[in-house]
Image (cartoon, rainbow, N blue to C red; front, top):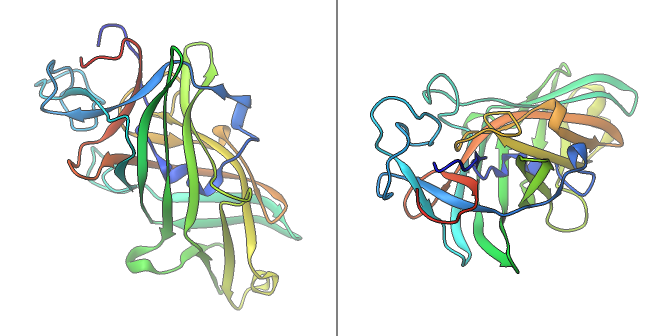
Length: 263
């Protein structure tokens, strides 16, 4: 790895929760760029397809991602229990419109979009945009803890870019593509919140590799501490895990710092 940090699987799962509010006031990226985790890399540094593990039989390494917009895919599948299960996404709202401790739980997160590497002078950054769907299995509405109701989340539009959280600590920040609103959520059924109509999701989150600011690999984690959201006017947090891959190859994506060459 030549001393380079490997950060976040470019995870638009964050999409439900971003903007300039930015968790922990992150700043613009400092020399970060997107790589694929692939068996075709020159140097084999990792033993798994997410480039998380550096022990065992080393079959995978990093290969630079294109500088032109390239199709990517998102999933929360194979992110739990040694990549055998999916990780549920949960949004929590302590107080919204008079309702306390509201939770929305979505078992299936999927999406498509594009990503690319770009340069501004000597600085490099990775960025992307796309549409994300939050549902339960089979496209059903997400679950809630409001008796008698489910939650319909409209498709989420978000952009993302690599950011510095602090010195030598990096992540991927997501923000609304247009208008400052990621999505709307409507409670459907017989609970009291059904009368509220569609509620906006605004704010921001930062995803980090493995859930730590200086992590590595393609498993992108959003924690409550790294989310700063507004749902229907109330503060909210999101917790979830996902990976992003290059659609044409199926290879998971990671973000890494200079030097910009294959491992």
